[in-house]
Length: 556
Image (cartoon, rainbow, N blue to C red; front, side, top):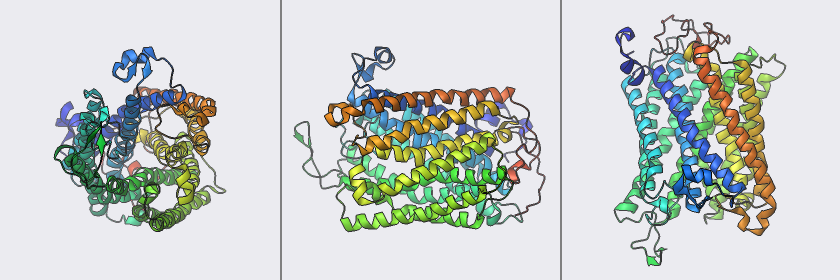
């Protein structure tokens, strides 16, 4: 550790701390703040889709640059879904699950006193914090934030005059993403070094909790996948400011003028982006799957069924995630033979996913279940993983995906399988490890109410989008009802939006429960859930305080 904590002041102990637990909580709390921003952006997107011509004069007074006479501007709508996706995927879910839980728990679960490189660990958080400030600062850019989608496809992202958000806002987006990648890389190296080199004597890799295994694979995925986006971002910045044409084809006309240069390919950006983009799906999902397996162990009283096969399944999912990126590009004009290859690999990745599902079923079969709040969230993850996985089989097939590409069906799929499973993993982890973090229990009554309302309204929000997508509703369209064939979907979109509003309101239960429990929650015992993993054997939990080294016996 960093030394005697008693001699540390508030700043060195809680702000510029080297303690992995403080750093983990810093990640978690920052991600919670970013989630509020991302959630509000999502509500504005849904409101626009449901009632595109409505006069929102009261909102326009708060956001005057995004509205004209009380009606939302199309370019502002594009900025909303761009920044919502970017903030939620990278700055909320990745930060909370990996930076938050990973930093706090990995040293405790392997029996180490801290991360292998504490200063590098602190640096990774502060780079993430700066990247969060940069992405938020883009909202104050003169021409507005980036508006080319969270995928930043050229030429919208490459030409500074393409749309208002293509100017300074897009530059800030690229800088923020570059900083985030640096932060993730530093953290991933630290995770691997800690897991491989700092395990307690007698603790083998096959004795680790499945959450730690998930962090191990996530670190590898990030180190191998993020460099492609780093390179692509540098190339895009050169296209924007140095006259290169990596992603700009010849013959592009902007506002009546021929764009100089050319010879590049926008499809190259898609390949580089999705080489990261699909592993990023599993970067978000694997921690939630690991949490689910460990919670099934705790709340059924027996080790999860097929532990070794669960590890193998995670390894296969991680490796195969680098072989499926092309299914995001079936309509890009790629060779049908290449499309068929990606369809096959996409189908095959369902095999290790199925292993996890059937092992979970066996883990729950004929066992007494303690339906405490963390277990409810784990069951919710199970439900979302199966539901989203089934719709993913459709989208993995070329013939079907061509019809459903860029429709609301795709929005439903990835919000259930990726965003939903990851979000439920955050809630499961917070409720389960809150006693370890702060020495107090969260309210079970509020926790169960939060789970039930979130579970119901989450499905009410995203499941109907499958039907809207099958009926042809296009995503990222400012006013879907300009198309006559989509006008009958107005009632469905209104229902979805009201469900989304109810989903957002239900999150107030979580924030109230979280912050009131910090001081008013019941005192937690040493091991309130009766868990067997090492993080619960460090004595009476006192939040970020220094634990006593008890050298527990490793049993598995």
